[in-house]
Image (cartoon, rainbow, N blue to C red; front, top):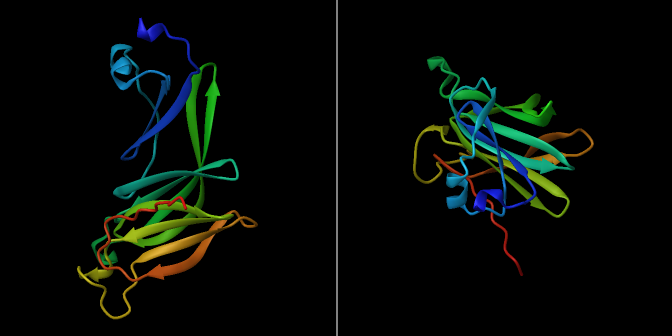
Length: 182
């Protein structure tokens, strides 16, 4: 049977809204094999968020991080403002039971944050957030000095992100980093 193939077992953490799930998988199995093998998913953690619209996992210096883009804190007087959060993620295993511990590293002021993107260039690491309501409710081309996409650079000495640049966008719903081979 395809399920009895010997392969190195790997783990993956899946973030679904404010629920953290964990499942084991065998990378040598095809997706159709995984269905036949009844791979199970287990809940390992619930995370309190404020309408999380995006999650991003990345690794810097062998440490796992998870950035949560909180869309809105629910307060009508705040004009879609929220604190988005960066966590250091520590995967644990005790007696064969998996767990995940999140340590809050940093908060970011965001306005209708839709998601995070992580990028690296040389030895520099960047975290980019698209603030959908960063220019109020206007959409379309950026008006005047509106800069609603924030770029942060990781300072290794402080293990924190610092403001790097604001990009001229209005109503951004997503950010994508891509790499080109030369």
